[in-house]
Length: 327
Image (tube, rainbow, N blue to C red; front, side, top):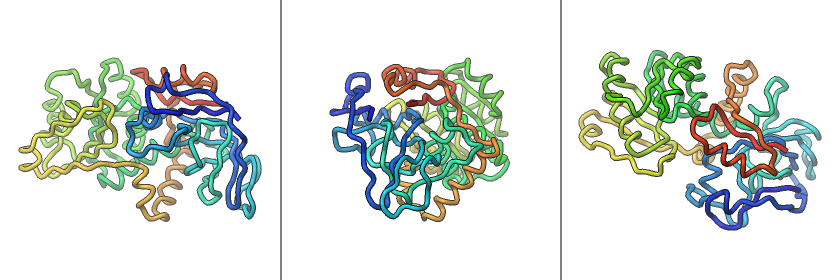
């Protein structure tokens, strides 16, 4: 089978290679999937670079998520059928391969009304957006949320979810040309980080109070800027590190305004949360995809053999959606 593999950590264009690997054979309780669609997430590329929170043993196959068809059943598996469209909630190895093994207990069927492209990116971004807004920040209708990296795929999903839940969003982007695009998508306020007096503009939009919550993915001065937009008692959740720069937080603001900063990592949430709660969130999000209320955007598709072009596109600034590896 074709697979993307790396034998050492480093820049993806230098260490990734297309290789042929033996077809995996499902054991008892396992399913073999013929994967067809896989998104390229920042966490995938940071793993290849050796800079992620959890690193695989080498050689390794990248990829956290994807979707495919049930291709073979291991002994004792009767919960799914050959040819069924499936999202694996964890595979052996990574998803940037034509085939992968997954426990039969860790599979989610894909409804007919959900596209392959949406199903492939069901796990990382939609779940992260939902948990941060609904559970971690516990926002209420009418509350103000500020997000950095608002032009990202997750940022666009946050705007969709916020509109459904009645939250109001202030969206920070690097490029001014993204401002109108995100306003058209439903963002209440969209600001470029290079503009002057961003904090003052946020105060004005929120009636002088600041925002109830922040979700932050950039770090550095952008993270500090977002932190300064919090109202008293507000919380900032850090879920990314796109700039690889630490956030220089103002101790006085944290002290006298009673602010909270905490991290969110999907892997930790999936491992530590009650399984029934996880299932509830997954089912609710899938329902939103079925009704068309939640649609992860797609910028482009590339065959596995075009992985270098795909990775370059995935790291391009100003993308309007996720880059998907097919084949």
